[in-house]
Length: 60
Image 1 (cartoon, one colour):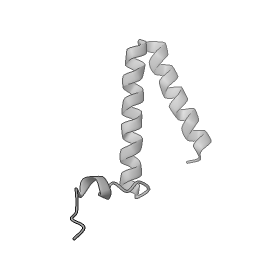
Image 2 (image 1 turned 45 degrees about the vertical axis):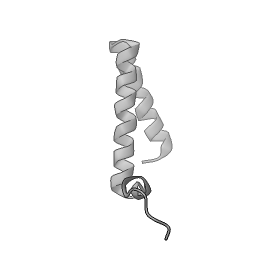
Image 3 (image 1 turned 90 degrees about the vertical axis):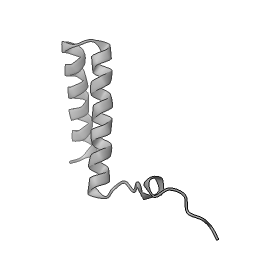
Image 4 (image 1 turned 180 degrees about the vertical axis):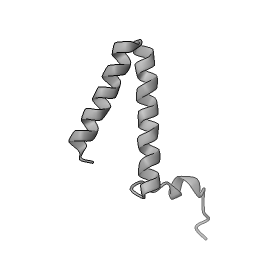
């Protein structure tokens, strides 16, 4: 999926949320879209979360 198609889909979803709901509901939809995108990138291997998940390591 190209960035143009993805951006269009995001804009469409946010526009529909705003048209049929309030501004607060649109922000909730946007938050879940960002979370879903992050999960999708992590599952596909495009986003490396291991430095944040593994914790601190000693440097000795």
